[in-house]
Image: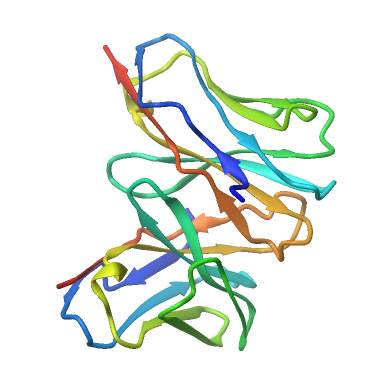
Length: 114
Length: 115
């Protein structure tokens, strides 16, 4: 199993509060991703990183920011949480070697914004 | 526009039978990869199988095989000899060569294996 952890695993927060989710990997993979999963939508990409301090937006990036100061850590921040950001958040990693570049996922963080 | 389409309703399959999950995709990139992931009720995402756009043969991984029809832009997953542990959501995803290694996911297919 790929060494990916997410913290916290569960969080309940109030509307308007800042929230930071952490993804930590021990695989030294170059690429890291944040997705959200909502019923009827599958997984949607929020932001991704292709190296330390190199990040870019995904398809649902509004209201989210990210930072990657070290290879092993990728942080997702909700500056002011809204109820529409209630979701399950997955981190994933991949390394561009070989052909597949498959992504391996963390266990997920369930976030509830009340 | 949606890049990955999975439209089957939830499926019930008898144990030991085969099941086919449909996936169609849309891309103008000649180089791409197709993936299937499994998500059991416990929530983790598990990589199952990969098919490259230039691969001449359909991919196989144990009981999983991918029926790749490039002209029709379909990449159906076949699970042979279903087991109770195959009950899960299954997601099809695509990586385009110019997409900076991003994946676009479909909405998933629910499979329930009944004894």
